[in-house]
Image (cartoon, rainbow, N blue to C red; front, top):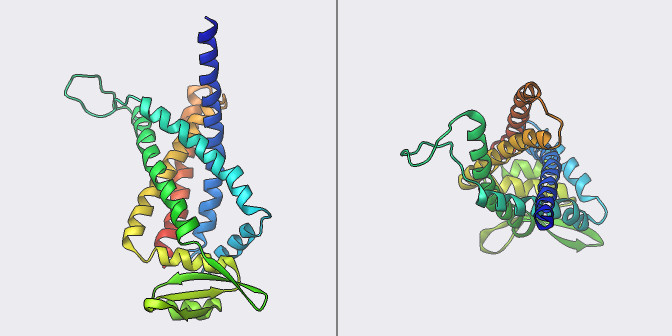
Length: 263
């Protein structure tokens, strides 16, 4: 009996940690997409808003330590336990041949999509961090005691006007490539985002990644509030559901603005 109680207590604690990390990541997603939306040329005053917010974030002391403790650690905890739950889940919202029951009501379908989007997010999150934080992240150099931030770009018809508007230099490199030389990290990051979304492949992949993230966040927020006893009655749960989907819609708009409007 004591062993059974210990196992249940451990399971209960991990579920609460998973839920708490999920709530924190929803807050981060809101801030992240609000910042990224300012990269949209028509929404962020030609990227100036994005540059200001990015520079503010880049000025945080011990930024890499902060990223590991307040982003990397919660993501790994939430992702690890989420994958465990996804592997254990037995979805039954799809049509069957009669060999097993099928319940196609709304909340059961949402449960299925929550598990499916968890796989999209697990793969997409790893690829996103590797691409944006390591492969394409602006390099730095010091010239005359001045730090310069370098972002690799390819030529396009609007590149010259964008370079002139943001007051950066453009240097040719080997094999016909170009490098934007900026005086602040935010400007270099803006060119990184702009370069990424020149590709229709990247636009498509990030659109799928974004829609999976905002659905997972909105539905997860609703279930987390039930888990923590905020939404106890059926009436409160039903009333909050449009709020959760409304938040997902707003986040989707902000994210799509960055993906489709940065270039």
